[in-house]
Image (cartoon, rainbow, N blue to C red; front, side):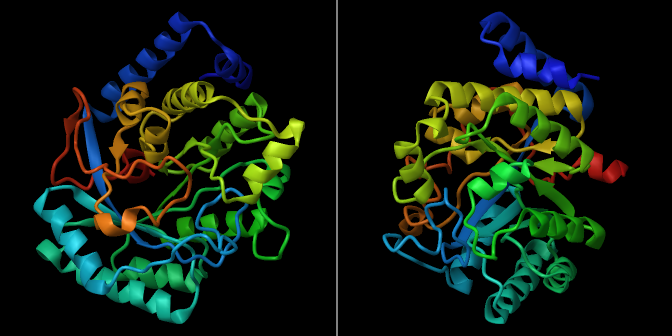
Amino acid sequence: MISRREIIDLLNCRDPEIISDLHRRAADIKLRTIGPKVHLRGLIEISNICRKDCLYCGIRKGNTLCERYTLTDEEVLTCAKHAYAAEFGSVVIQGGERTDSIFTKRITSLLHRIKRIGDGALGITLSLGEQSAEVYKDWFEAGAHRYLLRIETSDPDLFRKIHPDDGYHSYERRIEALMDLKSIGYQAGSGVMIGLPWQNTQHLASDLLFLKEMDFPMIGMGPYVPHDDTPLTIITNSDPGASFPSVAERLELSLKMISLLRILVPDINIAASTALEALHPKGRIMAIRAGANIVMPNITPSDYRKYYNLYDRKALLLEDLDLGEAEIGFGEWGDSLHFNKA
């Protein structure tokens, strides 16, 4: 077991040899625990319409410069059929948060239709924000079996700094939603942003221990990448106390976090975040070598990708499967061993 003090020391460490040893240790643990394969989740960004106003996000409701879109049912199904034909094994339906019944019932219908592709061959992950337990249950019964809902930070004070105080953004509500997902039976996943303003390595150590304690079978965490049209960027430009690490430092911290989490919980699924590609063109490969085992190629129709702009410098062409020496688990769901063991 690695202690909190050791985690903080490694996050602060700048010695290249020690950092390389950390990544090698995590990669070895991954190989021995879950094997060499990387599993694919074809990412379908269904809509950038969102009812939330998170201060860091480019598709926040208050961003009037964001051009909104919603994929049609046929476009979503075409994406899913492409994933099936390419033997991705699974898809992820991700989008801005909407809780109206028109949207939630549409997702239920789409899940039923996706499950008919290949006679249920595709695994389905959802990442559609906070919903009622009833909606989560409907979606689970319709065929979704994994759900990603990031906490973004496990520190309630920092959570409040990066979300508006408007009654719609609550740390407690986020925890409640995560507990709902777990109780319904989802492989419930969460994650954090790394390198936020006001964040330090003590926060990040707490994040890792929180993710372990919550017993999530899958984690999607990645670096903070600023978006020019967001309040958080405006705040950080005017507040010296709200500085954040450089691109190189955020990349290094993100890879360390992946390795440390792999050491803490060897048998979970850890995604190589697409945000890493905004910091380095080989970000996914670096994450795999640091202990990640899930990759989400973007299969959203190309005409829409530029509008799902959560952060600036988003990589738009992620269909390629250049994952270095990694072995790809084609046609496999790649469910978490940690979940199956529970």
